[in-house]
Amino acid sequence: MITLKNIHRNFQVGDQLVHALDDVNLTISAGEYLSIMGPSGSGKSTLLNLLGLLDRPSAGSYHLNGRDVTSLSDIEQAQVRNQEIGFVFQMFHLVPRLTAAENVELPLILAGIEPAQRHAQVEAVMQELHISDRSHHKPDQLSGGQRQRVAIARATINQPKILLADEPTGNLDRKSGQDVIHLLEDLNRRGITLIMVTHDAEIGQRAQRQLHMMDGAITHEQSA
Amino acid sequence: MRDLIHFCWGALRGFPSRTLLMLLAMSIGVSSVIILTSLGEGARRYVINEFASLGTNLLIIFPGRSETAGINPSTMMGETPRDLTLGDAQALTRHRNVRRIAPINVGSADVSHGSRSREVVILGASHELLALRHWELSQGRFLPKGDLDRATPVTVIGSKIRDELFGAKQALGEWLRIGDRRFRVIGILASEGRSIGVDVQETVIIPVASAQQMFNTSSLFRILIEVKSREAMEPVKQFVIDTLQHRHQGEKDITAITQDAVLATFDRILSALTYAVGGIAAISLAVAGILIMNVMLVAVSQRTSEIGLLKALGATPNQIITLILTEAVMLSALGATLGVALGELGSLLIRNAFPDIPAYAPGWAIITAVSVALITGLLFSLLPARQAARLDPVQALLKH
Image (cartoon, rainbow over all chains, first blue to last red; front, side, top):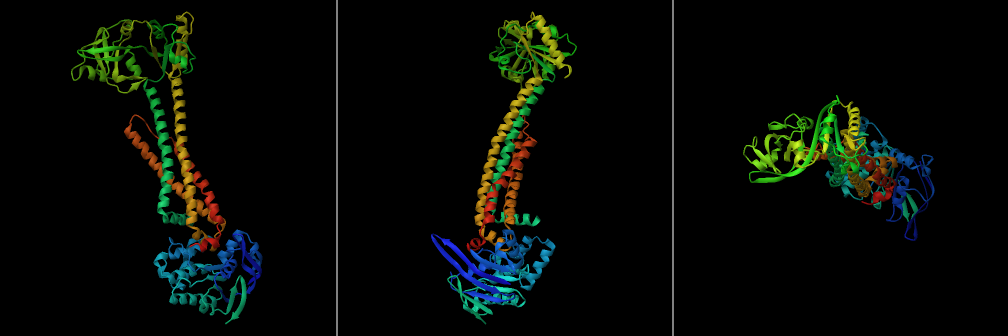
């Protein structure tokens, strides 16, 4: 499903060239549960952004479902992000002035779906994630766990094949963190490819496949 | 489309102080265009109405030759090669299309009654002048009909002169000393306002022959002719020129102007003035446009994380641009609407304060102001919109 070949990503910081990703090769099959671990600055977030088409590699090729996505135009990449990839962020990134339901609705609006159908879809997803009673609350009226649920609802509303989670529990207490992890794993069991970046070894070890990164390269891989 | 408007409306409401500031700038721009042009337009209509109140189909004759089509400096100077006389005026009554004719003489003299006295502009006139100028009397009657040559010692005075010289006492029938002669007051004018530079309230009118004696002259200042119809203006004008040329030994030494010519000149001047003030006010609209640009730039940087998020959720660069532009256009549209309301309120206040001036903003000014507001709003937010579209989503999402 995902094939990365000789991926490099360099940043120019002052007069120094930083290799955030240094010759990364990776193949991920559909339905996998993968965690990426490593200290900060090891390149794990850069890798995730690259997988999510938020960033382009300096060199190398990225095939998604057999298609070379690095050569796509901005508009095509936006469509891929909208339809095939869901993001869950550490900071939730909910729009503060919109209600929970409106936040969940955003990807559908961007995809140009009719209001009636949108509302039905939003309602269904929120029910599934047990937050339908919070649909008219603004993000600042929700707890951290609830916020992350809203964010997950938003990430999955277009039924993407890949869910990318960047430290999804980083801003949550232990209890709601575990809830969120269980929710994500549940989605994975139903077929979504889950790729999660974390520096929490305990959470990372739950994944069937665990990548360890250091200085922009994958150092070793473990399987549960 | 509805989603877009809904989303942008939410964004505008999310930053109320910014939105209010923008609305203020835009509405001040639009309303100043409307108020200033309504003032200019009001002044233009005021002048036109004043001319119309002189009487329609008016032909004005004065001594001194110039091109007859309009006004130029020499007509204003009125250098006189040959006098315009009462005989000339009488000769002009012969044309069948002449309804009324009023010879006028002007001078200034001391007017006194008892111990009170003041200097007044004296108008030498005839019976016809009242109807020709559409004046009205509050008391008594106007100058008597009859021979223009007869210097009857009677006078009609303006209401202010009456107040100043007679106070609360009865003026009608009293004697008034004008210069070194005595006149009996036979009428008091009711009309207010100005007519070609003469304040009706401060006028003393005496028979034209009396004025000629008093100022020791045989010449007239003007001859006013009211023509029966608009179509007859040109023939009558030609008749006047021909007749007076004949009477003046073949010299074309008078000027005949129609009211249309005067009106057209004033109309041109005041229209230009209206355009000018409108243009000056439009500058404030451009300033409002620049303000919109700055505020939208700030808005973009304030909302980098939101824009980055939208990109991560699959917004295309065009969608982002549309979003920012819609927001800007909504702002300008709201501001323009507010500005039109404010402007109309302003011109209403002007009309209340100066009832004489019909200060209505012309339609073109409103349309131009609103469309300039929308266009500047759109143009000046292109730059911030493109900046938002180019935003790197990774950087935008990190910054939080």
